[in-house]
View 1 (tube, one colour):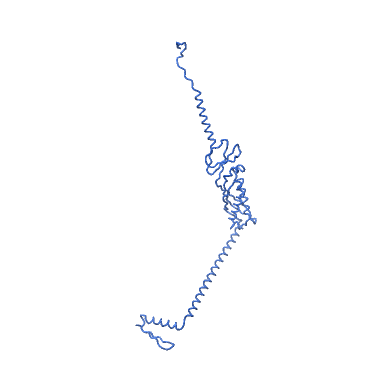
View 2 (cartoon, rainbow, N blue to C red):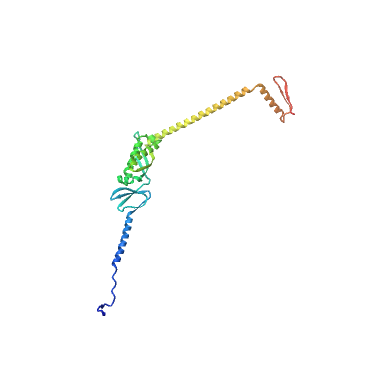
Length: 287
């Protein structure tokens, strides 16, 4: 039953629940949304450039010319980052190239290169991130052909390899440095000649080695003959000097000395020697 209060109001038998504070809840939701928005903006504005890379910035597809080094950076969230490696890269090329005689050689080459970080934006704008395929490979092939065509097949197989490497590296440096690519080294891994030409070159080299060995042997024999001649001349000179210094008196004196030594030996008692010149005997008795 409903109760009638003294003031004329009607008591419905219980109290009504309080209404929620929508204004406070809306304020908290707005704050949370702002925090989330700020975090998203920071997330979109933060970029990380890994070790050995540079970041090229673009705005709506246009290269701005700015580059970022390694590390974490805050950027305009409307800008994009293209990461390019500046580490050393290796490019292997196997090509059939001509010598100056027109012979075809199989040449295996390795190129070590890297992107110039100061020109990374220019390379990305003018060539793209696949610059190795677009400019490095064709330039390497052209440089190899230009270098090998200036030498004979024999020279390429024997003593001109280092010269060819140097020529290829110089040509690549001249062509690629203005395009933003640094050439570090060029290596000739292998040179393959036609089988018949290779056999003839090896036979020629063997003949040259045999000739050098024979020349060495002859030189050694000539030196040995000269040594023996000098030794014989020394012996002859010694004998000549000795013969000039020997006289009859010296020989007689030496005979006396030898006889005296014989007479003083333990088994000798009396030694009598006749003198053929004066007939007088020479008698030596031990003491």
